[in-house]
Image 1 (cartoon, protein in one colour):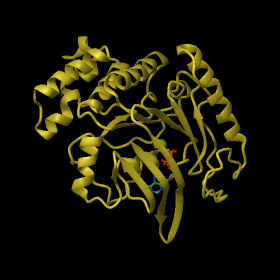
Image 2 (image 1 turned 120 degrees about the vertical axis):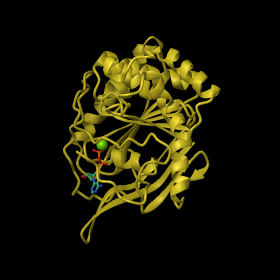
Image 3 (image 1 turned 60 degrees about the vertical axis):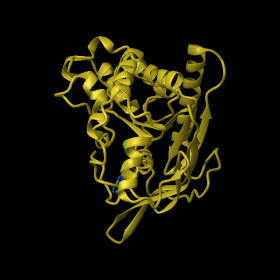
Image 4 (image 1 turned 30 degrees about the horizontal axis):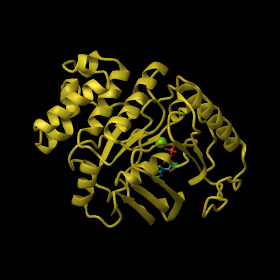
Length: 310
Ligand SMILES: Nc1ncnc2c1ncn2[C@@H]1O[C@H](COP(=O)(O)OP(=O)(O)O)[C@@H](O)[C@H]1O
Ligand SMILES: [Mg+2]
């Protein structure tokens, strides 16, 4: 469904080029829930922004639902963002002046397509995510977890091929995080959604099918969740994740269990590995925030490089 092949991305500063993604390969299948973790500066947001069609990349291919993203013009990219992708951000990005239900419908409002189908889906999502009782309330009057579940519902209103989530539990306590992760699980089970999530939170990641560890712009390792039941499986997977993260943090450049391609021993971007060691209450809030690209082609398209606000 999503295929990323040999993806390279550098940022330019003056005449110098700083490689950030150095040959990334992975895929996400339909109805898969995949997380990417890695130290700050390892390229997670850059990767997400390439898939979101927000920044151009030099080399490699990204294919979404059979469509190659490279070479599309701005209109086509806007269409991919509107119709094929759904977005969830760390800080929710809801519109304060609209109710929870209206926020869910925002992508359709922008498209001028609030038809019966959209209204029905909005109501279905409200009840699926346990937020139907707050449908008429405004974002300021509901909890963080409820706001984020509203944002997850909004990301699904166009029935996208893939949901991209950047630190969706980064501003939430453990209970709210659990509810948000449950909404992803429900979206997958009941609506066939596929989710690709950047996270620092090993608890959130432990609910995924697969976790990709990114370090210095390459895939350092990929862990698959084991079989087994509910909480046991999740707790065991979280333990394995924590072990792998610890190992990655102490590994020297070049060590790479997944034998990733094109790893070039480049040490210039060896940011310290300060992934949160398994806290269930990650509240860092220091990660980059993606822009509000929820609308219909209203955003700056991928031709201009976007500087992440730290
Ligand atoms: N627009 C930009 N211009 C120049 N450098 C950037 C830009 N965005 C990110 N970077 C740099 O690229 C590297 C990876 O950043 P990022 O993808 O945000 O990492 P992560 O999300 O894993 O913390 C960092 O060294 C960061 O400073
Ligand atoms: Mg980031």
